[in-house]
Image (cartoon, rainbow, N blue to C red; front, side, top):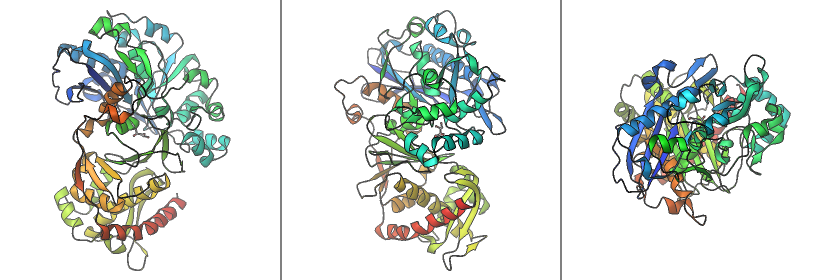
Length: 536
Ligand code: XUL
């Protein structure tokens, strides 16, 4: 668990950002100069072992869920810990946050009454225990809705039409397909007693508001149900996934909407000010975009268990690969995102397979080959990949372009890293990335500590690469930034709200010669990937 720092400055104005993520619930507190004054977290597996989760989820084949009540109990526990540390709740002027994307919560008929009637004598968990018609919330790791995806694409006129409307072709984890699966099985579950469907983000906001909170445009874009152009639900998709969904989902709102004041429960029990505002919650990736203060043209490359790339774009150009969401800090702009299941674990696996035990040795190995790897390239999907679909390894030799079954270790490690970033550049460009020397790449996640990898990113993207401190918290911090921004008058730009946040640190600059080499390889890589896709 992260070290808890005690908040200071009792009379100050504070902003809270919560992150209901897969493995933990976390909150950060920022003061008016946007310094982190406190952070607290609850790890689901360790702090709530009674739910028996592994990494915060329960797996049953391709079905992956989390107990909805576990998230509520985690909030009870988190607030109790803050209280025990004398956290100055009364200074919080606004709060917001985010949740893991795509996950969904099913409120049973009558639950809004329970939310409105919360009493300080009992915990949230006790008072809301009967409120869920589906007790196990489907989460983003679920892969069990292939047939629902196929039907949705078919009924909407094909994958590209669905993408043009909703920002993405049908993906198993996207909420519409999860709802469709529960709806199809409604004779064997309690789906019919549902009165409201929330995303994890709007569910969290509902707890703080003491009534149902609206789904925001940005997280709503991860459902395959929301028209990212008209910013309303798309009836064709709603109809394909179930009955009465417009009413069950409620009206979507811009992500910077001030939903209203905090519920009296939190005022009475913890001493929040009755004027504390709750701002719409959003998805964790959109929230990270806010937390990293992205601007038009910037790209974030997040190198974690899965790699994600996201960027601020002005016009949506949805593709069959990748996602377009409404931008969480400017509802007239968009964000594009690529999500790769093969990230750090794959880098580690190939490193180990090459007989290398440390990242230092891995980097020494990388240094033995030149940028471009003398034309040797590879695709390494040891985990089932979604960008594009498929699993397996392909190696193409630089000499005669034939496929081969192995590379010497120094060629293998370079083919792996260069392949991962050529793939990202290829798809980012299709989604609207314009490479200019003014573009910034902001790197985050575990592997962003590896300077050799950062240099390859700079050379491939022909961009300066930056890191910022504290990016492990970027989703939480984004919530607190948005909480502050949404209170600013006159439609101030988000940039104005976050002027005082920590500076970026320049860590790699592109080298012209290396970039030219990568540009020559890009088409070859794209063709290899197409031939891989065609076989899966
Ligand atoms: C994004 C996605 C994941 C989750 C993780 O599409 O599925 O990044 O948001 O919390």
